[in-house]
Length: 163
Image 1: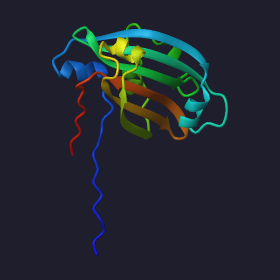
Image 2 (image 1 turned 90 degrees about the vertical axis):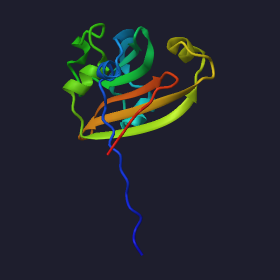
Image 3 (image 1 turned 30 degrees about the vertical axis):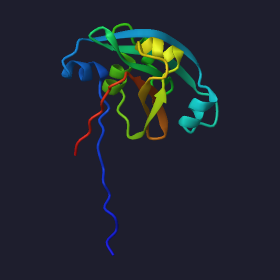
């Protein structure tokens, strides 16, 4: 009896600016909020941490042709990324800085759908209850957490992977 074949797909972590531009759009970025605090328990659990960990939370909206494209809610470890607070988030997104400056060797990736609540519907300029794709990604270097992000996409967003 032959074992079942293992099938794999590779997903690259894109720089959202490049993703928008490759689709022919004009990229924009809006910083919504940025603050430093101890990570809440659910973020500690995501990173498999047993206690308090200083992190920077960044909420931002990526735009394509002036319209919402992806809303991201991100936590960045300040132990692993001590230089991150100096990044001008009005000029460069956390997504782009992290992809370019903090290579990872471990990544957890989760895809699921949600119905837009009032806050997300307002941010993404869509209807309350609209079906939205969520991409959650958590990265580490060795056992040290780098970032975890919940990226909520606008209706119609497509993610392509090929082998």
